[in-house]
Length: 470
Image (cartoon, rainbow, N blue to C red; front, side, top):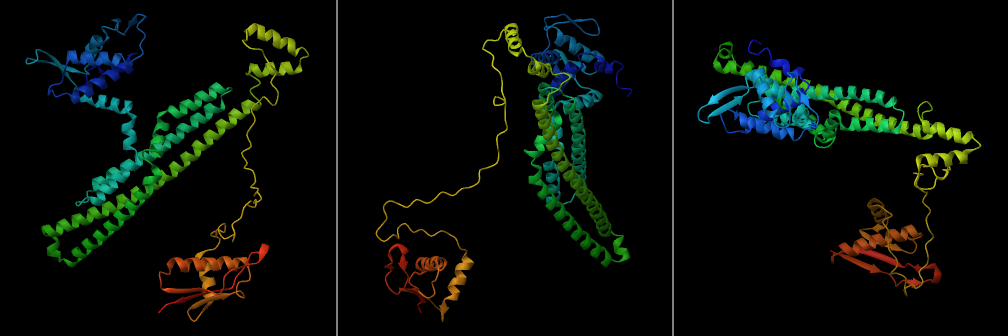
């Protein structure tokens, strides 16, 4: 703390604090990309600040003064800010004889604060650290690591805890939107609350969890890796215990014995870490599911609030509803509407809105299925078989059962006595179709007689025989 200058914290008391933080982050990022070992020159820093000023929304039409009383303009603000950074200790300048100019760099204490500013301004970094994909990556790396470094598991545990903490904070943040939503009395207020809830940082992280990070996609993979690592670790632990148990007391004191004991200790620590990761991930899953429920309830309450305003409105604040109630009770409704139209200078003739003019909910119930009568074709083929198409009304098991019922000594045989219904005839056609398609000369298929037309009643079946050739 003794290294920090006394004016260092004056940045946080300035009304331009947000701009100062943005400028410092931009200078730090450009300095890290620069090839210079000493840092950026003062001219380069002023150029970076001017580029950031073009992205700001400062109104330069009015005179602006800082806390020191210095006049700030569009042309001198970069130089003034850089001068403050050097005076307050955020930047350190050194003269470079090669460049013949001053170069600036970040002291160690200042760099810690600027890195924190970067994390605050770049939410994607935190969302990357607090993601299911990161937990999956750590566990997969540990399973592939030959050394089985426990620090990888510790990183996975910390990431799981941060993810669980983030989901808890998101649920707490949702409660504030519930209270704010219940206080709204008009549509504009509800719309503003919904837009704020959608655009806040928590909703962006929630969107990453459900899309890019794909929680449900990696959830099962993480659980499988946890079980796999735990099983492999227990197997290694058993092997090490057997090796140590088979060694004598003197051998355990040797370098090999000490290494085996250390490896056994690391296995025990790894088992504890994996179990903790499993517990944390279970908590993450529960909080994620509760957050989804809370999001659904929030949307339902917003819709209910909108329906309430559509139907009832707010009698205390909604002047439009008071006007409608006044018109409904007055006998001079037409005169009042005419005077109102003249006052507000409407561009089109007014008309009275009836119940049919209002929005009504569409009936979402589907109409019941009503099968239409099949129309007979005008022209029928001579034998009528070309229009006959079998539909898959029966399963393979039912067809096989029908085939076995009519098998005698390895020969399928069915005549007019066996076929007594339309179902039997359809099954027989399936048997005949399968036999003709798969026969390939191995089966002998015989039909007793030609089909004889019976007029309107259809055709009369004679006999079908299917026999395997030797």
